Length: 113
Length: 118
Image (tube, rainbow over all chains, first blue to last red; front, side, top):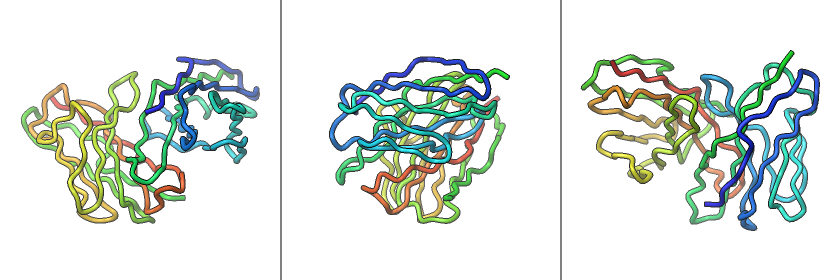
């Protein structure tokens, strides 16, 4: 399975933008880039995903490098409720693959008031 | 959005007993469910993948006779921790996927079950 590398932790102040990086240099052409986050004592929550083009939704934006070897999750205005562990995961949905999500260590985001 | 319900949210049991955890997809049919375990301050570790009506596929190092998985219907999968020991104390999380393989749609996760074995 292609691996991802993320910083262990990051900090932000409330109302400021946050850029969470992810490196995935061994990504294959059929790997989607998924982001999930996990709040304390809860199951993971889907944030966003993309393949090649940048993506926006109500929670965040995903910027994908042209060579797809890295991506950045952007929270436009961090709130205290965004404090969580953010996981960047590659997912290959081709038929014949198990389509399972393998979690790395993620980035623990702290948000200060 | 799709909801996955896990029950119980917390359970305490004595060493040597068995505990069953349920994972239900509330508004979609889950052809595939995944079971994860998470120790404090660590990431989620995939334990097994279950497909409705067939045997679960366990990840390397996970004892299939200790962690029994049953996916008898399209909305319910269960994980039974048999002969539990204190080292089985952990946060168990399930996730489910509908019959949309190949679409890259997200997986839906339950809120986890905190198991404490005394």
